[in-house]
Length: 317
Image (cartoon, rainbow, N blue to C red; front, side):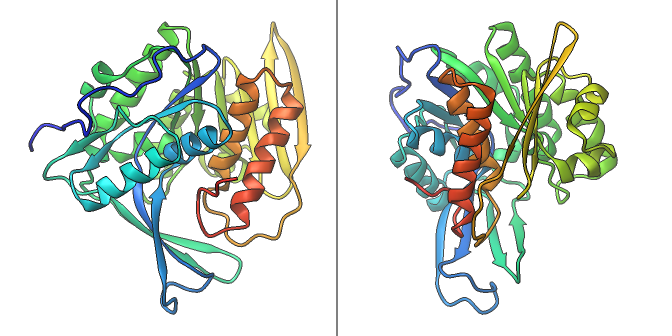
């Protein structure tokens, strides 16, 4: 395989971004194909091709909210890779850290909206992003980074991705940068037996962990926020998202447990994929702005509601 190449001749990183301003998001983005109007994949007649990836979606929502963000990943040096790069960059995200890999494809996935539920079909085997390794760490620009955001999806892509992810999280901690980790368990990538322990170990490296109640119950047999926080032995805060019910944050400081719950916003759901990433972006943006926990959770619900009303993962303001 040829070495990755940068699509830029010079860095576009915000060199003097305020400490509380820039969020570095790292992880795979694929070409997302979705029916233009809500209809089953088999019957739809028109489609949209958009960037679809947990970390880039967070970065785009942050940028759309006025929070400087950057996204780092590997894409195939192919038309889809360039298309995704252009789209994420156009949303205001710094993409100077993205590498284009000759000879490796950009992953693709299809949304299949059904009756109250969307099925997602992934075609990512051998993707450029799945080949990410420790060389990524040496290429990261930490200047002005306030927070690192990563997800468990990366750990499930390959052994080299999993090792790279851990190294990046440890480096962020060494630099006293806030580490945000969304569990984002994907059954199609790995088994519960393999994912459960690994995702728990990675969560323990983070200052802020996001998880859906349903996936927590699947992975660890526990969805109650306070009990889950204790069982995982987390050093910081845990946010448990419980769909249309709401979200709860649990934090332990000096042995004392504090908990906050904010109900979800009422919304007519069109399609749910991507709402969790929108929630995370809303929360992170408010947190970096110094907002209290209730405001962070409420801002997360607000962006999630925007996504729930669309077939797209990212819906600009």
